[in-house]
Length: 345
Image (cartoon, rainbow, N blue to C red):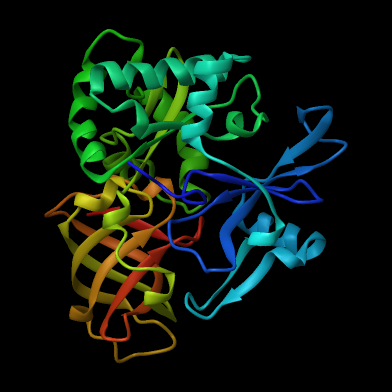
């Protein structure tokens, strides 16, 4: 299966300043890739590659502020998405790193760290016991750009719509086998709770309703791992310019999940039947609940978050979606680490 470079899971290094960005999504403008700053050269940094030290930025707002102050050329406003974004123009790209190439390189050149070794072993386990084709799996994250620490997580990508959906079923068997691959235990969920909810004050009980059943994360030989799934190119639905989004402000609503098939993918998507609007967006009090059809997110924390038939309370950004200048509907986008929520009732 052929995937173009510069999609979710890939990293980009910029020319001249050696900034490293992680690519977001699968649709991009013609002249640049939408990607967010992840590592930057810093003499005081705690990571090192080829004699140069780097610092990692985690928080999205901190990433935005860092670029605004130091590298504003990597910020742009997208009329299509009605949003200020981060991105690197094509002529400023020094290198695109892909998880598929990284996995292949480890096979050919060997591993130089514990993170690389166990990432490779986990991929091989999934190929052997999960029936994942070797060309449909890769290793992303800090090790892909040589900036991992000893305690870094294992970050894997699985490519292909059907491959991903079928592998999710195989994962249940893998977790039940004695192969050092398991789901989190209660104590580990407790320790992850604070940074997973991101200061949003979601009660632990509500956090656990979703978290305890997610299959895309766990422990392998005692190391945290996280899997992202990418749909097949034929399922990407149009191009960047086929969509036009308009920001309508924040909304809170109660909804029923009517289809969660695409909840495992990045970006994740849920089809909903909006039952009741609890707080209308400031920009419009005339929104009809029946016109809100989807919930989407580029954040991994919302993957596998709710299931078909469940009632959820959602807080996020309401957007009007226009596809190919014809079909119009509304969606809720979950992106803000503190304010946005999807809680099972």
